[in-house]
Picture (cartoon, rainbow, N blue to C red):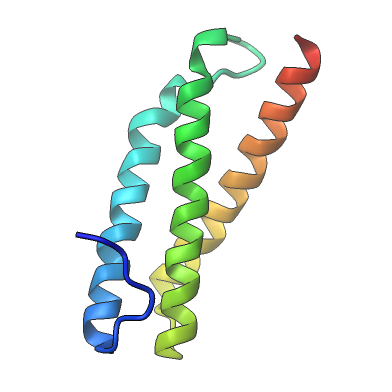
Length: 102
């Protein structure tokens, strides 16, 4: 299965967007506990940080396409998109600050 932002059928586009958003949400849930924090730094956690950042970015992209194409984003997708955007920004800032300290 591949994400197709040009899918003709809006019903299938919405279903596909929800599947992909849930997949990315699951990726973040699995890898988030392994992200280093100021209280417990770990140099081995950068793959988890990268996975969470990419999943958040991809989720935002999928939900943005879904909202623009369908013309009617669902409330749940708006909440997820906002949360993933904040998560992506926070993790990006944390990664930059950790690299500066090394």
